[in-house]
Image (cartoon, rainbow, N blue to C red):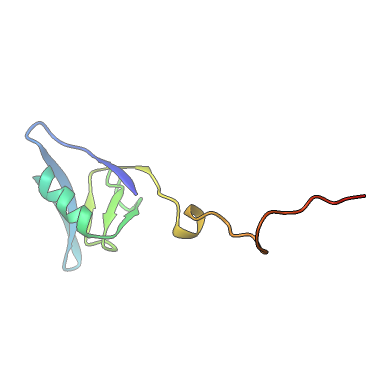
Length: 92
C-alpha cells in the first residue's frame, strides 16, 4: 500500500497506540515512523479520524492517508490461458 504521512513543522508524525485498555497519542520523527511502517503490515483504518495508516493490526495508527492500495498478488499476475501455443484460425 502506498501512503502519505502527515508531518508537523518539526518533521514529526503523530501516532496513536494502545496502552492497556486505553489509547495514547504522541509523536515521533517521521523517519522512525517510516521504518516501523516499512517493517510492518499496513492496512487502511477508519478507527481514528485522520489516522488511516494502521500497522500490524492496530499496534500503531499513524496520522496520514492511504494514497493507493496495491493490487493483490492474484490481481497483479496475468491470467494464464488453457492450452499451448498460438490459437489456430478456423478454416471454412
